[in-house]
Amino acid sequence: MALLSKDRPDWINAPKSSDGVYCYRLGQTSARSSEAIAREAALRDAKARMSRDLGKTESDTSFEIVPGSIYVEHTPAGWSCWVQTMAPNTVTVVNRTSVTNQKALGMTQLPKEPSNLQSADLDLGQGVILSMIYISDLKLWVGKCEITIDQYKLFLSETLYEGQKDADGNYLKHIKGKDDTPTRDGFPIVWVSWNNAARFCQWLSEKTGASFRLPTEDEWMQVARAGKNAVFAWGDDASLVSEYAWFSGNTGSLQAVGKKKPNAYGLYDVAGNAWEFCSGWFDKFQTSRPLRGGSWFSDMRDLRLDARRSYNPNWTWNNIGFRVVGSPR
Image (cartoon, rainbow, N blue to C red):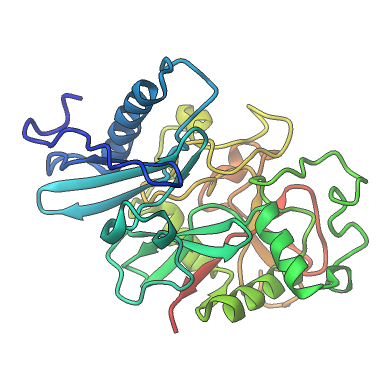
């Protein structure tokens, strides 16, 4: 904890609400600290405090704080961090204006005047949350993670969308029991086409009143770089790959989102896990759509930020998904 300023407040355990919400606050880090340092410190302290509150040891694996699920705000003095959890397994982003009112935390619209790297949790209904991060340089909200199975299933249940009409014969192959790709909530949705992803964005726009779409390749590159001119989303050091990405060197299948470290913008899995569809065409022939980021099946070459692949907009595969971007209307 040496990187934190000496005058930071102690953690504050907000009154436990009727819904069992615990709220912890980490005061300012020093102005020289990075967001990553602030996040790690917040999660470390929250884990220790939760251990005491729940009468558990810190090594107990029956509860956890999901990395990155915290509210952060940058000020001239440093980073202010908030962590909220409904013990023992759920962590949500905190709305600072009502930290003790759990029902006020879920938003249904994107904030119109956000600050850089502000987080927002959109409540899509039925317990499904879409987490977004605001990138001020682009004036754009970006999905913190790739779209997940539970988010896509909600889309299907509300629209009765017949996605096979916009895809090949392998559409949702795993959900139909014809493939061993994981089908649990929290895993990226795969076996969907570019056309399916576009329809999902259309539904999300209609549902929230915001404008959602797939990122352009330029936008994807900028948010993946996170202000750096580096080879990979985490920097130039290839030896750090397993801290940030699922790829062929450390897994043999798709993994749940948000389990590796995020990039400097707080975005997870921009390298590895699932290739991500981008908007636009791959080349002048306009027959295929661009893919970025690499996947669990990729080698290091595909994890480079300059790596790009193409795919027919009707085709699906077990290592291709998508991330959304959005802006208020």
